[in-house]
Image 1 (tube, rainbow, N blue to C red):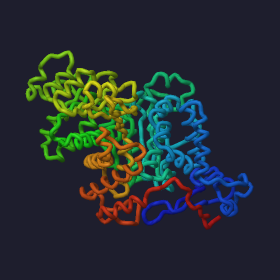
Image 2: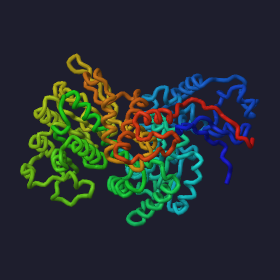
Image 3: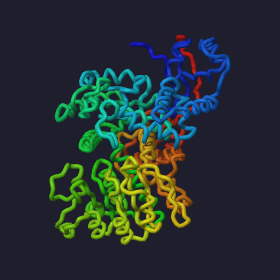
Image 4: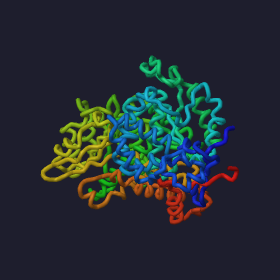
Length: 581
């Protein structure tokens, strides 16, 4: 096997203390972990055999970031900006992450939503270099061997997709790996999980997208999607190999279709350290917004009635997380379920219809809710009025489905209605924050799934918080791997939601903000990680630290110290020569 150019030296906390160069000379500039570009000092150039390979003058990292920012801004559109940043990542990881960290709200919209959706669609056209792993039926039987090639990087988190349920655009075939790349960059930005510990994986089991199948330039497996037992066998083969090669690493399932998302999450929850961000991350960040709203309302979660409009993966994930939180507040399972209503394309989800298993928990029995039999042209109005809904959540993707009449109906049930139109992208939002605030005379507490500008109403400014999963999954990842948790529990996400909500200041709450600002990402991620790791200790699923010789010994204070020291900052690390050089 070819020797890796770069290896890593770890400290007692599992953090990277130095990079180990296993060769010298210009080859080092082609390793994106080792490469510092013009920032190699004169001493490093002499020691590493780089004299003459670079221009004489040295630039420090700050200067490199400023220079790169100018180049990004010069690009004609966000796709070109994305290509530049990814190319920078492929030649100098540290500089790419330092650039993103310099203005994370600005660059996050380029490396992730909304630009990443376009990248998925144009993946084959804009392909520049290999990133991550592409499994398909032609190589899945080699899964273990392929994964072992990455063991030298001490993989700690993998984002894994089958590319079928890309948010808002559906089946994108092999292009879905761009979502994994973006999510892992945010793991690094938020949680400080070093990029060499991250692994993007595409499970390319074909595509049913006719445009891709007809595209001669398409780079994926040109075949209709595997289904049934063939699909299950493929996922099973991958999961067995992943668990064997990386038994302590976290696997985040990403962008599976709603049916497969729940089935895979539930099948492997006890076999792998894994979770589904579309279900559980969405649920947690939405719950965080609701918890923040309760701080404003000075009420409890268990005193609310919830309506989730859109019972897909995200919507049911929201309902599940609310359910867990209500039970933690003391309600029985039945009492909690009775306070959560869900709708799909057929109306209110009831047990009188044949349902996918993931919808059954919140299906209502008309015998227990006689008003369900009432005929109505607007089922949302009926549910809001009859069930006395106080928290309305939109995950339907149906533009304009929250009308003035609906907003007023929620307002009739509570002085401060919580209305969360979460559908992405902006064009699919159930209602704009501006309309909701005007319809409710400034009383509604609003957060959205997409970014919106602040709303002006009667000389008051209402900032609009964004229910962005980025506040949750990086911290869940760090807390899980740092504590050495052997599984990911539903309670982790309730703990994460409370941690996110606590990061909304009293001043922000007074303005009606329900989520932190993206600029707070690293701080929020740290608090989420501590909360999740502490919960793992309390629940007895964290017997040891997987990636560190520094034991937390079940002590939350020591856990915080461990997590803090594990985190990587985008600064150049010392480079040491391997003794063989």
